[in-house]
Length: 492
Image (cartoon, rainbow, N blue to C red; front, side, top):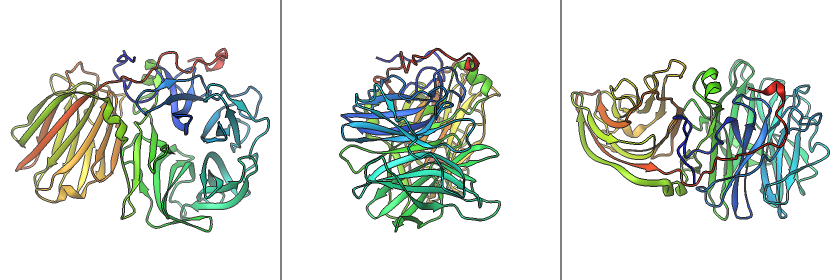
């Protein structure tokens, strides 16, 4: 049974160990009755180094059990400086993890594997690399994604090309052992000075004869940038985009999403990495950095748009309903809706006025000076999430972020939202499937409470419900102990 974390910003229902660094979700696989979620993990401190694969598993996406570290760098070996990103498959009674073998003396990250025959508790690495060298003309090579399609195994590898394009490279295999390079699966446009220099963590999902390619855009100047979704279809081993690339998530704090097709269902699940939006010094003091998003269901709509919503299982996390309020609000009279905990799930139907912005304010200080605003702008047809006043600590990042919301421009039309807040992360979902994820770090003692507000000259109507979320199923204790002694050079 989990208890609320002592750190007021450590999420209670989002997946992560209680301390140290995590980043990309890896190796999402359903095997022997359990969902397995691996992730990049530094067991020794809250910074990106000593990259291992951490490991949780669950029978139901609610109750999560920590398992020992799955992959550990081998001193002097082909992955001596990190077991980097990849994925996993279930095949012939075993799990096979595909990952990027990192060494500081190589610019590329060869693909290799490890196998587990005991449901992920122990792993055996192969003696030699699976794919040792990148194809000619590449300047980046990492992050394998393997899946089964049409009685064959397929693999995408994230890459950059020497002509300036980003690329996803395609390999195929009959047996998971011998892989044939099939060429460029998809590339960015070759326009000088535009677009990413490389694609990390390619992910691929099929919906009948349509398909979705997700890539994480990387540049040498700033490293990880943002995540982009491409929709289209495959033809002769190449992906043909049917629309312009679009953001997978409109928030500033999500990267490297990973996909898993739910067991026995035509349903795609997605987790992402939500990085910190605060100075490194603060994360170092706290002793942890990074969190995985809640699992989402990803669908492809009839018009070719990717839509996301929280996984249906997450309704079981709801505890007591703490708020139910309907009414209207004017510029002169914000409406006090009631208190909420630091971890809650909210649904709202908002009818904005025709002028100004209308929405909800999460107030986290008694005097009202610290707050997060979630509002609708009928003039621009956007959802707006503003964290400019969300923390009294200047080390927290501010900014205002938007997602398209055409319904906000239609007078009298309710706009439906679902908002899940967990201490320092907010995931905001629109009914049409658009989502905006960001981190924020309230410092005040609270209590936390919700208001409905408008800046327009007319009235705005609202109906809001909220439930406390109960972290009933995440065990964080004794997570991922590494049997090796901590290296002195990586001690925080």
